[in-house]
Image (cartoon, rainbow, N blue to C red; front, side, top):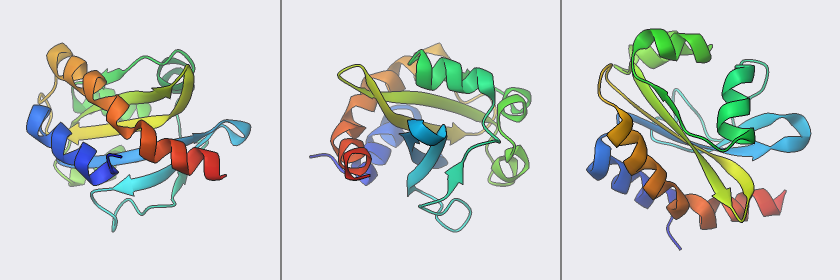
Amino acid sequence: MTDLSEVESKVSAAIGVRLFTVLAWIPERRAMRRVYSSHPEQYPVGGEKTVEIAAGWLEQCIEKQQPYLGADREAVRAVFADAELIGSLGCGAVINVPVVDDGRTLGALNILDAEGSYDDTSVAAAVELAPLAVPALRKVVDAR
């Protein structure tokens, strides 16, 4: 089984990453719970996002199971209430990739780096790596 630190290492090698978190989807509360963080001081494991999640992001990434690319600070600000904290970490671009197991959304990979770091090629690489998180996220989701 691949643990989430290994997923972070593979993402870093493939496309680069400054901030990497993994969120588990809790459908009954329409919430995301952080289960892994490269920056636990700023983004602690166990933290949850609910009301601050943009509805369009939830529909795209969680319900339609499509990745989201925010290539610049403006795109990050449009979706994330914590855009100021994200920016303070030197991040201005994000890729969010749903982690899907047999048609069920388990959660999402959140991959962030400097503004302009990511493009469609980066998104495609991240999508290829997302299945590596299935075993670890399945354990978290099924344990609820």
